[in-house]
Length: 99
Image (cartoon, rainbow, N blue to C red):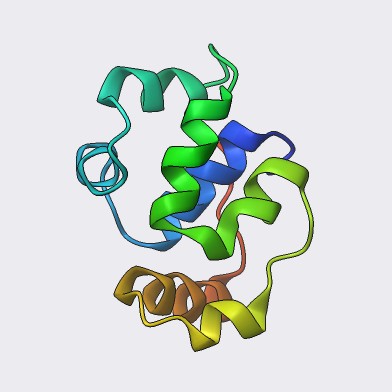
C-alpha cells in the first residue's frame, strides 16, 4: 500500500526500475535522505519536493498530495523514466510498499 509520500516515492522509483543510488543521482537528493524518506524515518521537506518536481514534475501531485497518477501527462512526457514507469504501471500496477 502506498499511503505516504515516502512510499509513493519508493513506488515511483521501483516502477522506473531505478536503484536508490541512480534515483538520488538523477534527482539530486542525497542517498541517505532518500532512504530515510522511503522507509518512513523522515518526512519530505519542501526542498525535497522541489528537487523531485524539477526532475519528475508529472509525479509531484501524486507523490505529495496522493492525487491519482496523471496518465495523460505521463504518456506525453519525453522523460524516458516516465515511459518506463507508465509501461510498468500498466502491466503490474503499483508495487507493494515493502518491495
